[in-house]
Length: 129
Image (cartoon, rainbow, N blue to C red; front, side):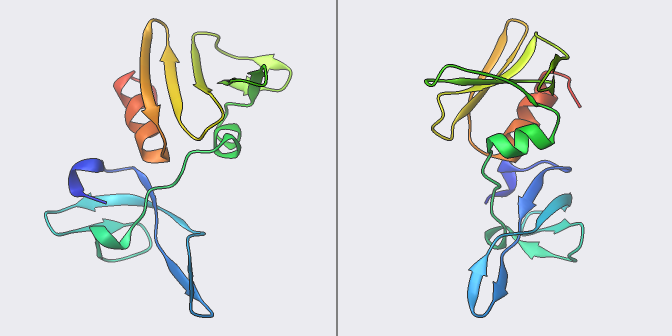
């Protein structure tokens, strides 16, 4: 990743080695950004090439409050709320079920969201924490 792709507070993955196999199962929050390296909570310093973005998934959306889902087989829409309760119809995240999402907030739309940190940026642009 590059410094210009991140903001303080973004979530990223850091590779771990288990039995000489690299895997990404831990997420960390960016604490500080510098020209050549960054700090994430849980690590002192990392180089930008030592971190990876977290792919956005339906499971991540649901765990973060987007639990009200409408789908028609072709596309899915995730709304704030849970299975039986739609909290805000003006805010939703949609996908054609191919790993790329968009955010709709009132009349604003941000397309091409593939990673958690990009969704964080889109939500910030809309003034949503």
